[in-house]
Amino acid sequence: MNGKWKRRIIATAATLLLTAGPAPALHAGEEAKPMADLTVAFLSQYIWRGQELSQNSVVMQPSMTVEYLGFGVNLWGNLDTDTAAEETNNWNETDMTLYYATDFGPVGVSGGYIYYALDGLDDSQEVYARISLDMLLNPTVTVYREFAHYPSWYVTAGISHSIALPMAMSIDLGAQAAYLLSDDEDAYPEIGGRGNPTGEEYDDFHEGTLSAVLNIPVSGYLTIKPQAYWTFALTGDASDEMEWRSVDGDDDNFFYGGVSASLSF
Image (tube, rainbow, N blue to C red; front, side, top):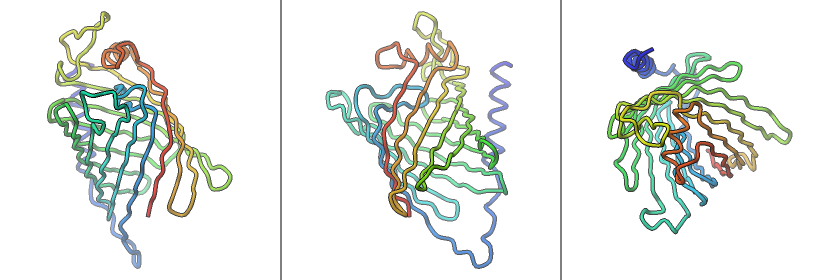
């Protein structure tokens, strides 16, 4: 399948998901209430879409989400504790997501807009759409479209399963595969076998991620979550691209983790 048809298929999927219908009306007597979540995570490394964005330093990632009637806003940030990196600020990213989510029986759909405010780089903007099924392994497909400075399509397909444990605890296991289709050979170039850009746009499967998150409820509002992740290249092209972007220039495989605390009300 050539790149032209891949772009058409991904664009059609994104359009269908983003134009999904409105949320169903509340049942009689059911009261709509706003929900909020405050989370702070401490992780051994910041890995984003297979890119190594930190090394040898703990990152702190606070997040705040407010949702009402399916509409929500999320603010997220990244603080790198490595003070030796004098060329950049320790607080190097702030993201804002606006979204809407609803369910049609066992089918969940959502879509939104993400603004990435980046230190030392041009800010990025995306729209995305997601569809999920409430069934065995909870399959989910998400399509992202960057349209500001790094034009590309990024598509993920994932599965997950939650296992109940004693004392109201649970463990969430997940697996995800990603496909990256770039429209700009400078933003996301294809990397040749010698570690240099070929002048072509990246267009291939990219990275896979396995995850495990242990949910430990402390109270009715507070949950502690130890977590671990393994991100790895799915193809030879992905390995070359991930190594080219990595801090040392030779890493395409990352194991990282940490703990987060979430306050929900």
